[in-house]
Image 1 (cartoon, protein in one colour):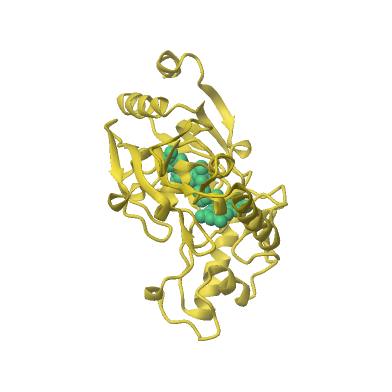
Image 2: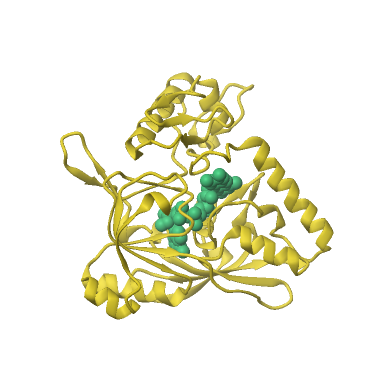
Length: 325
Ligand SMILES: Cc1cc2nc3c(=O)[nH]c(=O)nc-3n(C[C@H](O)[C@H](O)[C@H](O)COP(=O)(O)OP(=O)(O)OC[C@H]3O[C@@H](n4cnc5c(N)ncnc54)[C@H](O)[C@@H]3O)c2cc1C
């Protein structure tokens, strides 16, 4: 298997790689094989060869929205890093899937292009942000997108316009189709560099004030509840963090995992947390909010890999591998 992967990727595939160093939560077991690449063509090749070999394929960007199980990830993990950024006509910018959102924001600011500067400081890559339709301060990244390059699980490459992407809150079509993001184009407009820098600095300062950036985490654990999830008391905002806080869970701990005292929707790894610790704490928060407010919170973060049970069996997480990024 490794010989075939090596033949396709020129010996760049590494074996038994710890995923603690490739995810911001710093939990989880090893991956069987990891390929780091900036080239969307490698992503297409990976889809085709893993399909041919019937090996699971998992794509990681910045690893800033995932919780990897303690059993690790079977098959090939493709880690998208860096990539090309270029203008696409007078009002567009195209970035490869592995480009960081932060790097893209910086690139546009330096060239006096407005639209993405408020996304400065958002961890992760273009690919991860498109999949989850990243949000910040009431804005959805999908609103800035004009088109996305995709490869499906058969290896067929296509281009989708924004209206075809199924963007919603924490939602895009690739979550349902299993397609992978090769690149995305964003709408930009001429802007004054000083003003753009000031807006970026505001975003960074807001993050610093409201998020526990000095600890390992995967950002917000839960999605904010939608109106259809049920009514809330008038004085309670539709914010998962507020619900977790008002359910008395801020500061609650399981092993090395703690509900951040700074932000109720962040669980932080104080250094020694296992993925199981984090998951138990997530369940405690969900139960506390359900009992107090009658609302069942859904995860924003994505579970990947295997989750060994107490009896020693290794339960694969549904939705990981070839079916879902
Ligand atoms: C401190 C902190 C602050 C955060 N703040 C925010 C915030 O303000 N707003 C927000 O929305 N999120 C926030 N997050 C969460 C996270 O940064 C975003 O969800 C980000 O968009 C994830 O991108 P990623 O590249 O790290 O994805 P990963 O974590 O690597 O992957 C997430 C999912 O996307 C899939 N994926 C990755 N690349 C691709 C690809 N090329 N094609 C298809 N699927 C792919 C993965 O398989 C996985 O299912 C924060 C996280 C942290 C740690």
